[in-house]
Image 1 (cartoon, rainbow, N blue to C red):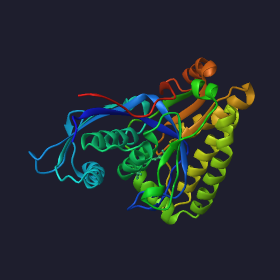
Image 2: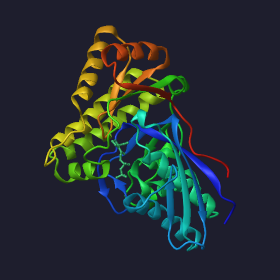
Image 3: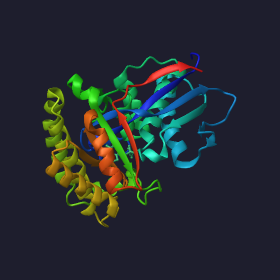
Length: 329
Ligand code: 2P0
């Protein structure tokens, strides 16, 4: 074992969504997904293995965590212990820098930071694909938070082949793409992501169509990123998000994460874009909040439009962020 260090991982927003598992035990997704790692939202985690405690301990923002969230942490730690040939329990200390006001999931950054910190504390030297496989065991979206910029998660067909890697993008696109998070609600959702995607995969008549659509969207998105074609990237991302949400409507029982304000914003953006030619596109995750994709020169106009049409929503702007980093305890 080596001296523990803090590991930092940033959260991500998917342009091609992960929605459905083909193997819940191995955490293998039904389809490849692709995300952008975000600069301003991250989790710092410190792991210390010690025989002085009986079972793993996990504190997030100084609150002790038990139950299912602790079980996910232990799942990642068990894999690290197996790889390192150790048995000691771990003390895990995490600090979230993902403001609730941003309406962004912290499980992606949390599980990615845990994977990196635990491997480091156990003395393992793992490359990024191996760390992404480790993070995957904690939460699917965490697979994509080991690397910075645009990241693709290859669905794979077993543990070894289900990992993430950075995707090449034109430098100007990476430098000036902006994500404007528009938050209507910070209330916990009625159906969590894990349960929502499981119900969709098991019962939605649109699920097979969703996985085909995701593959086709990814096929078109890769060259658009490479060419730096923001309009194409935005169109594909918006269409992919709405297709994912369509699949939830066709589940049994049907459900949606949309609030009336979610739909009002998505439609309002489409009308504004068509009438004014502003390059701004919407994407929505497993909740009512909307993330707008635009480029740096248009952020001020987007903020003005939001203030005029959705004056009570909270708005947070961010950009492309880095992969994992470490710093001394
Ligand atoms: C995504 N989401 O690609 C999709 C789009 C939400 C909507 O990944 O069951 O919290 O722990 O693997 O990673 C949220 O799912 O679910 C998610 P588990 P996770 O970002």
